Amino acid sequence: GCLGETEFKILGIPEIKIEYFEELLSDDIPSPSELAHSFDPELALELSREVLRKSTPEKASFIVTPSAKPRISPYREAISEEPLLCAAFAESYIKAVNGAGMSACLDSFALHSDELDFLDAIPNKRTLNEFVARPVSNAMSGEKRISFIAGSSTDNEKYCGVVSELANSIKAQTGAPMLRKKLSADETVPGIASGIICFEGSGISLAAARNRYSQLKKSVAVGKITASELEAEIANGTAISPDALDLAVDRLLDFAFKNARKVELSSSVSTERERI
Image (cartoon, rainbow, N blue to C red; front, side, top):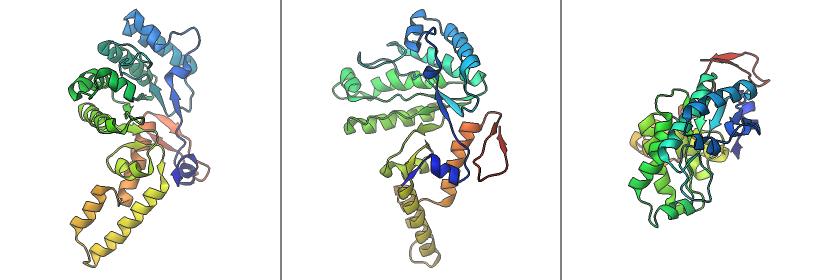
Protein backbone atom coordinates (compact mmCIF):
# COMPACT_ATOMS: atom_id res chain seq x y z
CA GLY A 1 0.00 0.00 0.00
CA CYS A 2 2.96 2.34 -0.23
CA LEU A 3 4.52 4.20 -3.13
CA GLY A 4 8.23 3.89 -2.52
CA GLU A 5 11.48 2.85 -4.18
CA THR A 6 10.15 -0.45 -5.59
CA GLU A 7 7.06 1.14 -7.11
CA PHE A 8 9.13 3.93 -8.66
CA LYS A 9 11.38 1.34 -10.32
CA ILE A 10 8.40 -0.56 -11.71
CA LEU A 11 7.08 2.67 -13.20
CA GLY A 12 10.47 3.38 -14.77
CA ILE A 13 11.04 6.48 -12.65
CA PRO A 14 14.71 7.38 -12.10
CA GLU A 15 16.16 6.63 -8.69
CA ILE A 16 16.05 9.71 -6.51
CA LYS A 17 18.85 9.83 -3.99
CA ILE A 18 18.70 12.34 -1.16
CA GLU A 19 21.87 13.42 0.62
CA TYR A 20 22.06 15.49 3.79
CA PHE A 21 24.68 18.22 3.85
CA GLU A 22 25.58 17.67 7.50
CA GLU A 23 26.36 14.01 6.82
CA LEU A 24 29.03 15.13 4.32
CA LEU A 25 30.98 17.06 6.98
CA SER A 26 34.26 15.56 8.13
CA ASP A 27 35.41 15.80 11.74
CA ASP A 28 37.65 18.79 11.00
CA ILE A 29 34.78 20.91 9.63
CA PRO A 30 32.66 22.86 12.16
CA SER A 31 28.97 21.99 12.38
CA PRO A 32 26.47 24.66 11.26
CA SER A 33 25.79 25.68 14.87
CA GLU A 34 29.52 25.91 15.64
CA LEU A 35 30.22 27.87 12.48
CA ALA A 36 27.46 30.34 13.31
CA HIS A 37 29.60 31.58 16.22
CA SER A 38 31.89 33.16 13.61
CA PHE A 39 29.04 35.48 12.50
CA ASP A 40 30.49 35.06 9.00
CA PRO A 41 28.10 33.59 6.38
CA GLU A 42 30.76 34.03 3.68
CA LEU A 43 33.05 31.69 5.62
CA ALA A 44 30.23 29.15 5.73
CA LEU A 45 29.81 29.54 1.96
CA GLU A 46 33.50 28.91 1.24
CA LEU A 47 33.74 25.94 3.60
CA SER A 48 30.56 24.47 2.12
CA ARG A 49 31.94 24.77 -1.39
CA GLU A 50 35.06 22.94 -0.28
CA VAL A 51 33.02 20.20 1.39
CA LEU A 52 30.94 19.71 -1.75
CA ARG A 53 34.02 19.62 -3.97
CA LYS A 54 35.43 16.77 -1.92
CA SER A 55 32.42 14.83 -0.76
CA THR A 56 29.39 15.21 -3.02
CA PRO A 57 28.16 11.82 -4.29
CA GLU A 58 27.81 12.00 -8.06
CA LYS A 59 24.43 10.31 -8.05
CA ALA A 60 22.83 12.63 -5.48
CA SER A 61 19.58 14.04 -6.87
CA PHE A 62 19.58 16.90 -4.39
CA ILE A 63 21.02 17.84 -1.02
CA VAL A 64 19.08 18.73 2.10
CA THR A 65 20.66 21.81 3.69
CA PRO A 66 20.44 22.88 7.37
CA SER A 67 17.13 24.32 8.51
CA ALA A 68 16.74 28.08 8.86
CA LYS A 69 14.46 27.71 11.87
CA PRO A 70 16.06 29.38 14.92
CA ARG A 71 16.58 27.53 18.16
CA ILE A 72 13.39 28.02 20.12
CA SER A 73 13.78 25.42 22.83
CA PRO A 74 17.11 24.72 24.57
CA TYR A 75 16.47 21.04 23.91
CA ARG A 76 16.48 21.32 20.09
CA GLU A 77 19.38 21.79 17.70
CA ALA A 78 19.54 24.73 15.27
CA ILE A 79 22.06 26.99 13.56
CA SER A 80 21.47 29.79 16.06
CA GLU A 81 18.95 31.46 18.35
CA GLU A 82 19.07 34.57 16.15
CA PRO A 83 16.61 34.50 13.20
CA LEU A 84 18.66 36.79 10.93
CA LEU A 85 21.80 34.75 11.52
CA CYS A 86 19.95 31.50 10.80
CA ALA A 87 18.63 32.89 7.52
CA ALA A 88 22.05 34.18 6.43
CA PHE A 89 23.87 30.92 7.17
CA ALA A 90 21.11 28.73 5.73
CA GLU A 91 21.27 30.81 2.54
CA SER A 92 25.04 30.21 2.33
CA TYR A 93 24.55 26.44 2.40
CA ILE A 94 21.87 26.70 -0.29
CA LYS A 95 24.14 28.85 -2.49
CA ALA A 96 26.97 26.35 -2.15
CA VAL A 97 24.75 23.45 -3.23
CA ASN A 98 23.27 25.40 -6.15
CA GLY A 99 26.76 26.51 -7.14
CA ALA A 100 27.81 22.87 -7.30
CA GLY A 101 25.10 22.30 -9.91
CA MET A 102 22.55 20.61 -7.67
CA SER A 103 19.15 21.37 -6.27
CA ALA A 104 18.94 22.18 -2.58
CA CYS A 105 16.16 21.43 -0.16
CA LEU A 106 15.95 23.44 3.05
CA ASP A 107 15.49 21.05 5.95
CA SER A 108 12.26 20.91 7.90
CA PHE A 109 11.16 23.65 10.25
CA ALA A 110 9.23 21.04 12.26
CA LEU A 111 7.70 22.60 15.34
CA HIS A 112 7.41 20.42 18.41
CA SER A 113 5.10 21.04 21.32
CA ASP A 114 7.95 21.86 23.70
CA GLU A 115 9.09 24.62 21.31
CA LEU A 116 5.60 26.04 20.85
CA ASP A 117 4.93 25.89 24.58
CA PHE A 118 8.26 27.63 25.16
CA LEU A 119 7.09 30.54 22.99
CA ASP A 120 3.55 30.76 24.25
CA ALA A 121 0.99 28.52 25.88
CA ILE A 122 -1.29 29.43 22.97
CA PRO A 123 0.98 29.83 19.91
CA ASN A 124 0.91 33.39 18.61
CA LYS A 125 0.69 33.24 14.81
CA ARG A 126 2.39 36.60 14.35
CA THR A 127 5.31 35.57 16.56
CA LEU A 128 5.72 32.28 14.71
CA ASN A 129 5.49 34.03 11.35
CA GLU A 130 8.25 36.47 12.30
CA PHE A 131 10.41 34.01 14.20
CA VAL A 132 10.05 30.95 11.95
CA ALA A 133 8.49 31.70 8.56
CA ARG A 134 10.49 34.86 7.85
CA PRO A 135 13.98 33.30 8.34
CA VAL A 136 12.98 30.31 6.17
CA SER A 137 11.64 32.61 3.44
CA ASN A 138 14.69 34.89 3.60
CA ALA A 139 17.07 31.94 3.29
CA MET A 140 15.42 30.90 0.03
CA SER A 141 15.06 34.36 -1.50
CA GLY A 142 16.62 34.68 -4.95
CA GLU A 143 17.58 31.01 -5.22
CA LYS A 144 16.11 29.05 -8.12
CA ARG A 145 16.90 25.40 -7.40
CA ILE A 146 15.39 25.24 -3.96
CA SER A 147 12.47 23.62 -2.17
CA PHE A 148 11.70 23.22 1.50
CA ILE A 149 10.57 20.35 3.65
CA ALA A 150 7.22 21.25 5.15
CA GLY A 151 7.25 21.37 8.91
CA SER A 152 5.20 19.03 10.99
CA SER A 153 4.04 18.80 14.57
CA THR A 154 3.49 15.09 14.98
CA ASP A 155 3.63 15.13 18.75
CA ASN A 156 0.68 17.45 19.29
CA GLU A 157 -2.32 17.60 16.97
CA LYS A 158 -3.55 20.97 18.23
CA TYR A 159 -0.61 22.67 16.49
CA CYS A 160 -1.04 21.04 13.08
CA GLY A 161 -3.21 23.85 11.74
CA VAL A 162 -0.68 26.49 12.82
CA VAL A 163 2.18 24.60 11.16
CA SER A 164 0.21 24.13 7.93
CA GLU A 165 -0.52 27.86 7.79
CA LEU A 166 3.19 28.62 8.23
CA ALA A 167 4.12 26.24 5.41
CA ASN A 168 1.56 27.77 3.06
CA SER A 169 2.77 31.26 3.98
CA ILE A 170 6.37 30.30 3.13
CA LYS A 171 5.28 28.75 -0.17
CA ALA A 172 3.30 31.89 -1.07
CA GLN A 173 6.22 34.19 -0.21
CA THR A 174 8.93 32.25 -2.01
CA GLY A 175 7.16 30.27 -4.73
CA ALA A 176 9.38 27.33 -3.73
CA PRO A 177 8.00 23.79 -3.97
CA MET A 178 6.90 22.21 -0.72
CA LEU A 179 8.29 18.74 -0.04
CA ARG A 180 7.15 16.06 2.34
CA LYS A 181 9.19 12.92 2.95
CA LYS A 182 6.15 10.86 3.79
CA LEU A 183 2.40 11.42 3.59
CA SER A 184 -0.05 9.36 5.61
CA ALA A 185 -3.00 7.60 4.00
CA ASP A 186 -5.26 10.54 4.85
CA GLU A 187 -2.74 13.11 3.61
CA THR A 188 -1.62 11.47 0.35
CA VAL A 189 -4.37 12.47 -2.07
CA PRO A 190 -5.01 16.02 -0.75
CA GLY A 191 -1.26 16.63 -0.47
CA ILE A 192 -0.47 15.54 -4.02
CA ALA A 193 -3.47 17.42 -5.39
CA SER A 194 -2.32 20.62 -3.65
CA GLY A 195 1.11 20.47 -5.30
CA ILE A 196 3.21 19.02 -2.49
CA ILE A 197 6.22 17.03 -3.72
CA CYS A 198 5.85 13.63 -2.09
CA PHE A 199 8.51 10.91 -1.82
CA GLU A 200 6.39 8.32 -0.10
CA GLY A 201 2.63 8.06 0.22
CA SER A 202 -0.24 5.61 0.38
CA GLY A 203 -0.65 3.62 -2.83
CA ILE A 204 -3.98 2.28 -1.59
CA SER A 205 -5.35 5.79 -1.07
CA LEU A 206 -4.18 6.91 -4.51
CA ALA A 207 -5.63 3.83 -6.23
CA ALA A 208 -8.97 4.30 -4.47
CA ALA A 209 -9.08 8.00 -5.37
CA ARG A 210 -8.14 7.28 -8.99
CA ASN A 211 -10.85 4.60 -9.27
CA ARG A 212 -13.34 6.95 -7.68
CA TYR A 213 -12.48 9.57 -10.29
CA SER A 214 -13.07 7.06 -13.12
CA GLN A 215 -16.45 6.10 -11.68
CA LEU A 216 -17.52 9.70 -11.25
CA LYS A 217 -16.33 10.60 -14.73
CA LYS A 218 -18.59 7.90 -16.18
CA SER A 219 -21.48 9.15 -14.07
CA VAL A 220 -20.96 12.66 -15.40
CA ALA A 221 -20.94 11.33 -18.97
CA VAL A 222 -24.34 9.65 -18.56
CA GLY A 223 -25.86 12.52 -16.62
CA LYS A 224 -26.13 10.83 -13.20
CA ILE A 225 -24.13 13.58 -11.50
CA THR A 226 -22.93 17.04 -12.45
CA ALA A 227 -19.39 18.16 -13.17
CA SER A 228 -19.63 20.30 -10.02
CA GLU A 229 -20.14 17.19 -7.92
CA LEU A 230 -17.04 15.63 -9.47
CA GLU A 231 -15.05 18.78 -8.73
CA ALA A 232 -16.31 18.72 -5.14
CA GLU A 233 -14.98 15.21 -4.59
CA ILE A 234 -11.64 16.19 -6.11
CA ALA A 235 -11.49 19.17 -3.77
CA ASN A 236 -12.31 16.92 -0.78
CA GLY A 237 -9.48 14.54 -1.67
CA THR A 238 -11.69 11.53 -2.37
CA ALA A 239 -10.98 11.52 -6.12
CA ILE A 240 -7.92 12.30 -8.22
CA SER A 241 -7.44 12.35 -11.98
CA PRO A 242 -4.70 10.50 -13.91
CA ASP A 243 -3.47 13.91 -15.12
CA ALA A 244 -3.01 15.07 -11.54
CA LEU A 245 -0.95 11.96 -10.79
CA ASP A 246 1.20 12.57 -13.87
CA LEU A 247 1.79 16.15 -12.76
CA ALA A 248 2.81 14.94 -9.29
CA VAL A 249 5.46 12.63 -10.75
CA ASP A 250 6.66 15.41 -13.07
CA ARG A 251 7.01 17.83 -10.16
CA LEU A 252 9.13 15.32 -8.31
CA LEU A 253 11.41 14.61 -11.28
CA ASP A 254 11.65 18.22 -12.38
CA PHE A 255 12.88 19.26 -8.97
CA ALA A 256 15.26 16.36 -8.44
CA PHE A 257 16.74 16.48 -11.95
CA LYS A 258 16.24 20.04 -13.18
CA ASN A 259 19.99 20.68 -13.12
CA ALA A 260 22.04 19.46 -16.09
CA ARG A 261 22.87 15.84 -15.39
CA LYS A 262 22.33 12.44 -16.94
CA VAL A 263 19.55 10.49 -15.28
CA GLU A 264 19.99 6.78 -14.73
CA LEU A 265 16.68 5.09 -15.44
CA SER A 266 15.61 1.74 -14.07
CA SER A 267 16.47 -1.39 -16.02
CA SER A 268 12.96 -1.55 -17.48
CA VAL A 269 13.65 1.60 -19.46
CA SER A 270 16.33 1.49 -22.13
CA THR A 271 16.60 5.16 -22.98
CA GLU A 272 18.26 8.00 -21.14
CA ARG A 273 16.73 11.38 -20.53
CA GLU A 274 18.46 14.61 -19.71
CA ARG A 275 16.54 17.09 -17.65
CA ILE A 276 17.72 20.63 -17.61
